Picture (cartoon, rainbow, N blue to C red):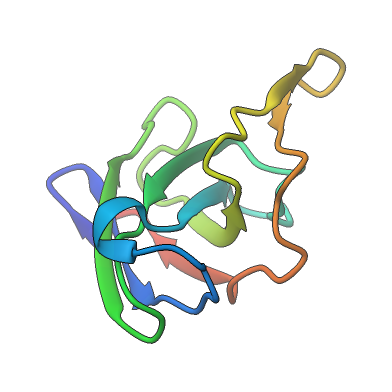
Length: 117
């Protein structure tokens, strides 16, 4: 959903993280692309990450500001999430001007979309 200029994502955590999730849960990175673009971990316009301190199977709700310079009202966003190592800060690929995360999970979330009002 969109609320107060924030993209609000809800979903269900699916992981086999071996540590106590109440202390330092698994981390996920979400990638956002605009209309007409396929979204992936190396094809996106905006990204954000969160520690998901939830047990496997638990529901979550997170939010991030929308960059209206990239995504003006009326744009349909596509969003995908990946698990990533907590230490992976990524590196900037100068050619594509995107950050590459070497430890991205090979199993992404479902792709979802929403139109910005």
